[in-house]
Length: 360
Image 1 (cartoon, rainbow, N blue to C red):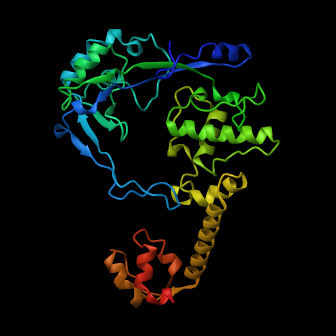
Image 2 (image 1 turned 135 degrees about the horizontal axis):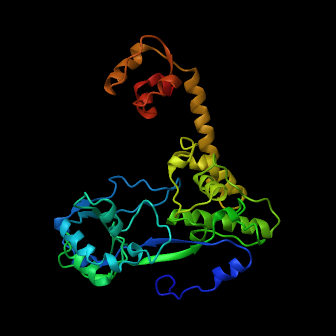
Image 3 (image 1 turned 90 degrees about the vertical axis):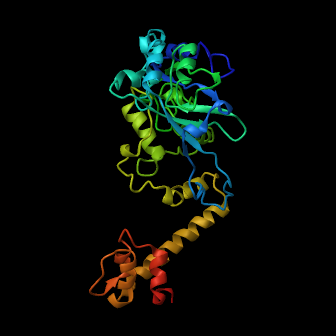
């Protein structure tokens, strides 16, 4: 029994909630060992650099990082698998002493060796934990095997021959409360003013936890001030998809948000998040006036451009040379600019450059 790293266990909360009528269940997850990055030989691994252009997530003029840390790829081998197999009988996850359901998309290394016995190697992603630490996260090596087995197996991985381990990987089993017991505000149906968010609802992943915390916090605030609840629909945001999935379907495994779950995924794009959600954020007092003004300006500019393109007719002789340069089919009669822009290989700025008359 234990809590998060360097914290005590939170005991008795589950029993208290069950005593009040809540239903609970168990889930599990695993962690990989944490490694001293100074002990690895990166020359034997495949470098995975960051993006050439750092674009960021913000629509504001936020300063972007000038430097990035690379990740690295290496692989397990048959020799690694042979060492790991010696500890299978002592793995709580593998031996069934932990019987909760684990995340489907990141199985333990024990599971991978067992379920994909025909594969003689598995990819590992070597991730620095941050700028100000030498600690490395060995993504793909989640395990609950004994410490000495983990260490011996790690040393047989290419680039890990002299590895030093800060902490071994370990299994975690935890209680969760099936989220069908919640309202769409994330308030519990049984107890007023009690909100659940994150892993307690059966989700896995930082983003999933963060968005639930945001919505539960907003709705707790709204409730205490007798204001209208804030509920995002499936067509509004991926947060809406996630919460609707949890409330209406529940989950029997650690839930992760996938775009394939969203029937409105072509509308829920990162490039229109400001148009979809800034106005709501502004009404709640979260977005600044400056941010709202920028969105209004963007919306008006887009409408203005659309109006111009809708009425602007393009002659074949003034645009076909541009089409040839982007490997797009020529036109043989006049067409509206709006229709031409639907072509996947035509970009608005290049299109405008090719048509001086459009800039007038």
